[in-house]
Length: 190
Image (cartoon, rainbow, N blue to C red; front, side, top):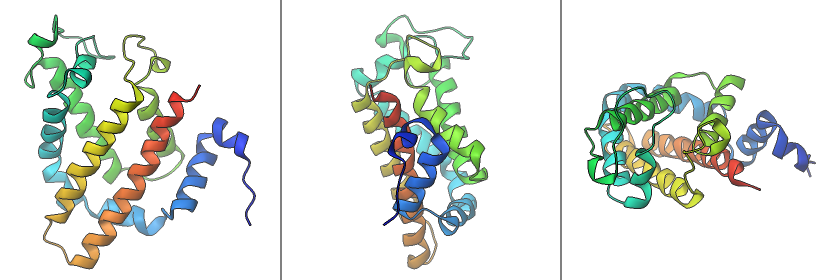
């Protein structure tokens, strides 16, 4: 039986990632599958982003988080939910972030900087990241991860690749999304 330093899981993101990856079975072969999916996923990223934002903007509980000024955004902000559309410049700004997230998943090395990135993605949706107006409840972050998982795994199921490669690719992304979800949830613990 392997011994785990549980308090360290809460304070050391790298240790946490290594534990999760080992426990879930996310390893070099999974990373290779994710990175080698770039020719298929890359051209489909705009569709995945659009599908995700269509869902986010369909509910007031999720859409309301795009009314306050987003960190790093300099343009006009919507005055209220009625002014918020999929074409609003602030939404385009957020869509660009999600686009870069997908690109990071398929294009970055899975090293200590990637662990910091996954942790930052979790933190940025809370006031802990600097913008006190951005405080997305955990239930909505879990809903977002469910939508991302659905649009991504559905897309993979449609790729013209052999079924065994398709299954391994779906499994690799599924493991990664569970790790990402944990790196989101950790910022909601009291």
